[in-house]
Image (cartoon, rainbow, N blue to C red; front, side, top):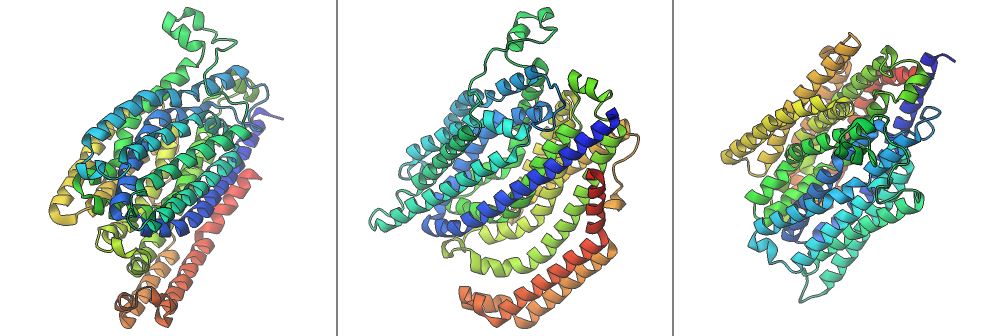
Length: 573
């Protein structure tokens, strides 16, 4: 078998593994989110907007800060270098596996100073209304402990993702999310039964649920992957050039690959700015808004991000795995087995086709979300939001999220590619641009807030910020392929949907809008409330939208989808 044939076979198996992993992750998100969505309807009705705002905005921001800064850089770098079980080239260097396993233990160690700093800053800046809630400090300690527990699972998580053993992650996180939601709901239910002290256990209910999640995830990972270690161990052999290095580099080489460690630290330092851009809305809403409006913003962001968490996040994660493995530089053993670099013309062509197909699907998907979401959201809000959240900013924030989801989708795919192939110089350059993006975000949010947009200014500022990041990463993708393969991966005209699809989407919008105006459906729903679900007018309107949506998807499949799927089948055949 020729080296080119072996390379194509490996790439095809990687593509199949990536698609299977994406399906598993989407299945996990769909099943767990549907289950937790039902229970969350009870949670938000049992918890006050003040308690929900503290948990979903402030505690979640604290937890995500600890987790993101401690593990993100190491996760991304390990995706590039961890040998894949069942796909790796014969004779993969055991030294590389040991180095990766050692590096995967660092997030828990790095989290200790991160936790001290973030907790100190948060307790100092928290308002008196927040700090005087019952069991605030105990709930805060429980959340921080849960974050550390999650980081203890990182050695197993990174091994599972590096070896594309997604089933382990699916079982761990799926069970963890379910147990978390059940425990939170039961504690809130018990709390609501305490007539005199009802509401006192709200913060602890969410904290105990989060702690249970970390324990369950760690337990499942440990049972599934008992060979993983929580602490780095001294390597039995070192890098060939280690004897020529300084004493510090020699010490590092006894545990890690210095090059991969440097890449991890570069990505970790960049994650500080990236985290602010990702979670900037929570930073600002916790500073600008009272606790009640923070609760309204949190529930709106929770509902609005359902599509992002169910569909977009798994696709982004598996794109990162796929491109990291497909376009990573080969080890000496792999280079000897292949007889050439992995980034040959066939591999680059496969990667460019995947990028183009991904963007094409996301643009079509975005049109459907904006069209049907903007039409049906006002009706859904009347049926979905609990009574105590109607007076908050939740409805306005959800309306803004309809326009935010398409930008999230496109940015996620492009940044997955960027983080998979960028070298340290690219990351340093992007870090400088990130400072500019941060300024754009802050200026946009402040200007819109002063113009009276309220909490929705944060969502629209995110749209402006992500649009700038999309332009940056898009130019990087074009330059990457033009430099290495001498051809652009796509042209903007190739990504636009077929005109037949655009016509049927526009026609659907007009038909649904006409029926809504003719039947005065908004007034009808506001008058009847949740009883409108059984109304013939509402049932017909929903059925009309569902039918038109299926027609749109069918036209897209006939004009574009079928060709995309056929192209991918040819690759993996």
